[in-house]
Image (cartoon, rainbow, N blue to C red; front, top):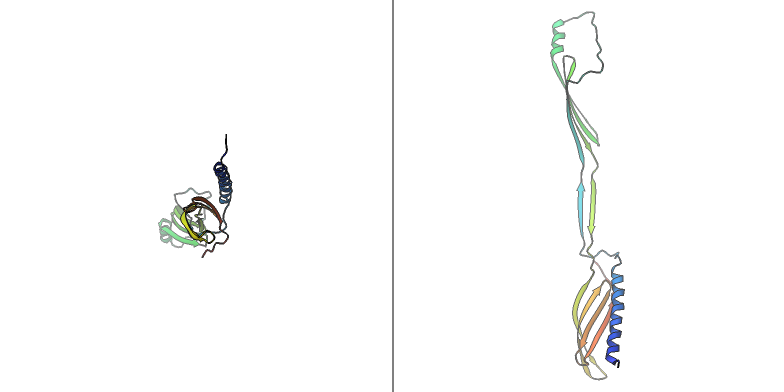
Length: 192
């Protein structure tokens, strides 16, 4: 079996392409510190307010204290005051809560008590920055030029594949009838 020179060149180019591809994929898996221009940011503001509302009707007393009067000055006024329903509305507030209380008293007993309690929990702002990283790109182009020694033109269309900072390209030179394999490294990037 005879090994031709073309087969050796193709084998060497294939091995070189595989080594360079493995190196590029390894480099592309690293995280980039540079935030590209095409990044977006979502801001979510969460304000939590906990409200508790409840009503008590005719609660039973824990203790009954009886006051005896030696002399009653006006019996009618005392009886009217006993049967009158008295409503007390109070409001308390601070930076962390607000509480409204409605108390109703009749016949010297608590008839009802309504309260509304709002606890203010400081707002939480959650910011999620979504960074879109350029992973892979394909570019088409070519080379044109002139060989001074052989006085022949150079025309070579080329296709490039980019992985992060590495660019691998391949093309064909028409006049020399030769394949071209190229590698470029991005060493400078300017971001506004």
